[in-house]
Amino acid sequence: MSNFLNTLDNLIWGIPLIVIILTTGIFLSIGLHFLQLTKICKAFKFTFKNDCSGNKGEITSFAALCTALSATIGTGNMIGVATAICQGGPGALFWMIVAAFFGMATKYSEGFLAIRFRKIKEDGTLIGGPFAYIEYGLGKKFKPLAVLFAIFGIGVALLGIGTFTQVNGITNATSMFFDPNGKFLINVLGTPRLGVVVIAGLLLTLLVGLVIIGGIKRISYVAEKIVPFMVISYIIIGIIFILCNLSSVPSAVQEIVQSAFGLRAISGGAIGTMLIAMQKGIARGIFSNEAGLGSAPIAAASAKATSPVHQGLISMTGTFLDTIIICTITGLTIVITGAWNIGLEGIAVTSFAFQKGLPFPPQVTTFIITICLIIFAFTTILGWNFYGERCLGYLSNNNKLMIKVYRFIFLVAIFIGPYFTLSQVWTIADIVNGLMAIPNIIALLLLSPLIFKETRAYIMEKNI
Image (cartoon, rainbow, N blue to C red; front, top):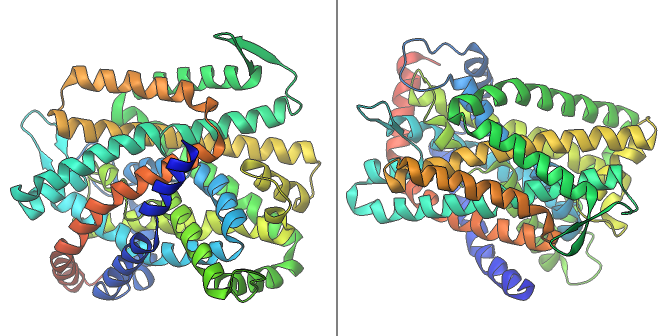
């Protein structure tokens, strides 16, 4: 099974898809006149101004951003970065940042189209996201593509970002902190399991169930309260780390850049090393910020947005915060301390890096990192449950019975998530992520002339 998954993963996340995702971001950046640079201050102003009274939608634009961030800021920011650097070298962080920079234009375009083509039915039900702008923007003949996206979206929610990777990260972190020697065992269906893992899995399943019953409004309410706190807290921890290790930052940056272009390759040649760094960095970067996947516009479509341009700008701040800020903090800690090259994997890499670089006792540092990971992963589970539910709503015309069944299956996936191996979990996540991106990228490219035209017209009219 592992061999099959690895072969499929390499096929999907090979050079072609990497080139497609990067060139799409570059193309959109050029067509939008690099608005991720010129309009980033305006984007943050719109994010926190939050003036949406009288506009259609279910939640505020800020709440929609928090919901999207709740889904994007997760184990990818801590475990995903560690995995990318361990497998692709420090250069993977460079390519992660490059992909995120161009991904900001992609995320803008997704947020723009989410508002531009959303539909609100007479009963108040909202249809929005890539399946909406594929069907209503490109026309009925493209509906099979919209259906494919929705199917892959449910797959990502149930098999990828939404469940296994997050649950696996939470249970591994809690067991590493509370029972590092694995002494406390519980018999589950005749098989001895780590007691901390079993208890953490049960509690997580229960908490998620209590929240998702309330739908988008309860999920956004929880996200709006937790996400700003967790982002600010992690940034503060990162700043403390950097200040304590300031003298090592220049050499770490040099190592990251040299590794990105294969200049420090010992074997396999510079080109081969560079391609591995690119593949791992971009794949994990997309996993982390989801630019190009089409997930964030599902949340953006629910916003009481002033205009498609406003929501697009607000949406792109999510990629900036997620990857260019938070993933860079994690990556720097790992490179500065050399934690990527000592035989550790997963959260153990990030935990070791912070333990070595922060001026706190190891137990205190481990506890802080464990709490950060649990909060990151928990909010991601909530966000992706919503995404999967909206995809199913599109496919089933909001059939309430099917949505209830979906929620049950989602909770089952959370419960069994801890018992998959780390490599299998991340490989499955990569596969379904790549499949989800393909229909969305096609739609973005075909609708790009409309995005460019209406964005330029709005910016000139409003002088923003």
